[in-house]
Length: 305
Image (cartoon, rainbow, N blue to C red; front, side, top):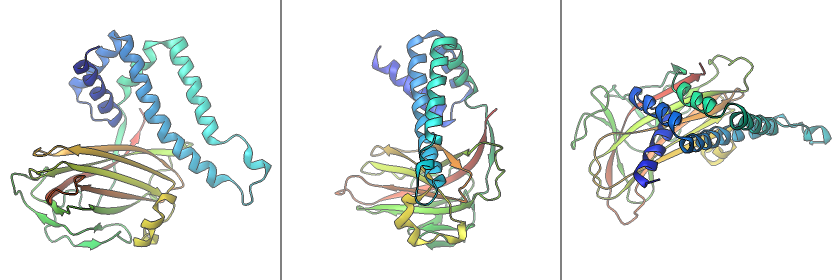
């Protein structure tokens, strides 16, 4: 298998798992999975790895929360993690042993047909030119906080991705630039009998012809605290979140245009808040500073078809 072909496979698989396939790409992926046994096998590995790791972290957190104080023999019963892995193994056996290509083909076709319900993000396109930006993590919803930034129109060859305005910041030569927002999950529908709900987060970032590579990133934390209970001190214990996901993208020097990063995460029903971390840094500590732009932040509840 030549590298360009395999690279195209990886691109299609990643787009399918991120929910960013176009109609033409979805048809291309469907034809590929229908004609190539090797592609089907690789796709199943992609899908199992992506979903299994997300569910593993969620189930482990739920299992830990369910252990009674002091532990005891009863706490060593069948855990959600064990149940999930057993179901995953059983599903893998069914796919390989009974249905073969048809089930894997179905996974690819139905990915992207889910219902997406937009969640309220405060000023997702930064269209309020007088928007106040707080320092640090916002206490409550309806605010953007983080490092220094300002609302601008198009500049340095970078037009806003949506609307008339966007957020601009100067990347330090050392360290990172970040902005935060807190979303309230308490008003979401309960999700039936499922122990978690899938939420999709995307954001678009651009650089102004940076002389060095720039790493863009999205980090999302689902936490048990209510929005009003979060503050800067929470940053020191953020790893206590009941679920989290991180995705980064390296932009080469001189690259132009908007880059959209999208992540999906399984959020336990016990989570009351969602904390968004969006930002960038320059890996080369010897490079000079660069401008970074943020626009079109979206959060959606994903409901299976």
